[in-house]
Length: 315
Image (tube, rainbow, N blue to C red; front, side, top):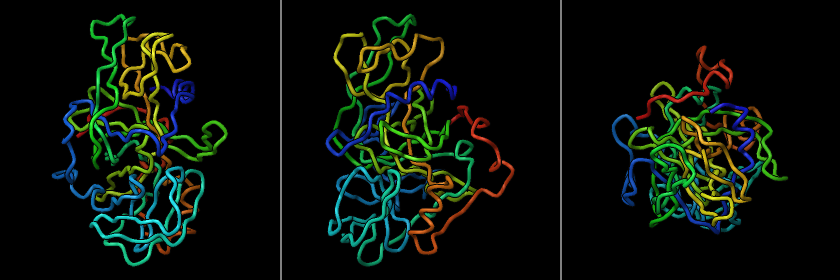
């Protein structure tokens, strides 16, 4: 996906909120039990062991007594956080910046993630976690020119903690949603051909964690903010929330054509706050006592974002 097109379609970003359905949606299957247990093999240790439950959303443990999530999922001091081992902790304090929130809890958490501090997320394998539901009815475009007019799936199914894979394609700084400053972000598309575990998020998956693999170690790179999800199949038809792998010949919730039909798929994006960016790194370091950070010490870390706007085969 080209950066110029990404900038044009980010206006469709739907802010994930606590009042809407939770969703991790897969391209390969609508099975509600898919990827509801910890990843194994190459993906073993990719973050499942750090994921807790905060207000029905994901909170990721990042120090012996702190977890991080999206600020807009809410919560208050005195609330209960269920850690990855099922133990319950009480929140004592919170610090916020952009759309990030770091909560301090009573007691000692069972384990915690290291935070990625490099700049080459798009070159690395990525796993995303959310408290997800599956997919619902097919979304098809009646005006598509290709033989297969399938564009994605509506959200549907029961909720559960799930994981999927994807790859970051774009990074930006100073992102603003409406009048709300979000700061530095990462964006990932939803590919129909990304492999069995290819996934995207949906409204309600806010606070979800994205991990990247650096030298065999999985590190926390982003916190899910929102997703492009509101579409119509005709200009005056009903708006549906859906996971879309091709926005060609679809319309936004205002009835305007999102993108003309094209030979290749035009993927809808999900957005995550970029923890490796300077603005967020400085804030995290000011809040977390001696956090375990690991940068990517190689020439690849110096590549600009444009160098990794590409798709690769995913596990």
